[in-house]
Length: 433
Ligand code: XLS
Ligand code: NI
Ligand code: NI
Image 1: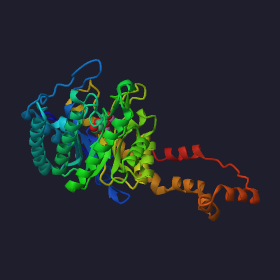
Image 2: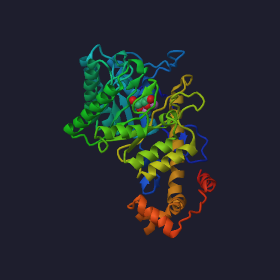
Image 3: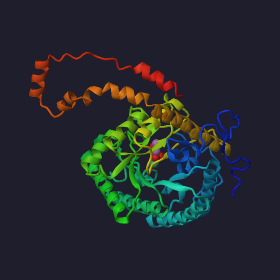
Image 4: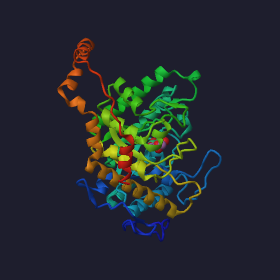
């Protein structure tokens, strides 16, 4: 036991009337909704990087957090793991997620990185055994170290491609060893700063080939989890190649990987791409590539990926409505890719941020489930398209322009516009919040 969270109680469900800051008001892990417990629906995961590795910097200032485990030794990495697992237990989150660089000391070369990662993975394995906390996904940080400044797979230097491929292999090995349920690829610097020095055609081919190798290795190792791409339009690069769900789908098609790779959709990335979160979720569902979510929120004025903890219940209700319509999570879950504000220095800030985020997700989720169970939106939507269920409607799609033309003329088809009933449906959604 460390004393980092000293005095902070384990967080329990106390119901909506509780005034206790250190309690859930909506997240009741054991409550059964639509045939499953909330814990199994939401599959919460905590993100190692924001909560335990991030020092609190912004573009105008450096470290604000003063954590006893900051430093580059294996001993400190173990202390960090001790504190992280204490947080997972206080919150009773069933999962966590990590990048190699979050958890191990940075080595002088590839071999030392691997040794350090292996040592931490062994330490994790013991802690996971002791606590029952599981790994939602692992990933490689191929964007922070200066060697990746011009990209990883898309780097103009083949040595960086090689270093990246080898690093991905070690991170997939770590994920498999720890029983991870997914492996994520976020292409933070797989994009460009200026087209003036960029061969976009080459870079796309390199990225496609790397992804094929990842899928091949998954099969070679018999990994049963999902490979997930996390779309983001820009930041840190001016333009990132896996811009949004639609772009990723085109990319997967191009490299024959649409049956192999799914998406991890992040709220803030959807907003940066000019979409809503629910748009990205709905599109992934329709394309058959929905995998998992990174839950957070952006500040809508700043225009950055501010990675704040989510607190907007109506937005989350619409998001989980789309998740439920996709059939819910299978290997995926709700990872809090969210960090404290840099003035939130205290251990209790870290706990309360997660408590609020988990509770807001639970409230949104419950509203979404109630909406879906009532089925009013489904009835209204089905009714709007009911013409397509008639024999004439269905026949249109197997017709051709001339036959359709002849029918329009013969039957004097003269469509009568109908209301989309948007306000009625918006009012309906608000009744569940
Ligand atoms: C950054 C990304 C990152 C990924 C994992 O914007 O969200 O945190 O989730 O590399
Ligand atoms: Ni992000
Ligand atoms: Ni993310």
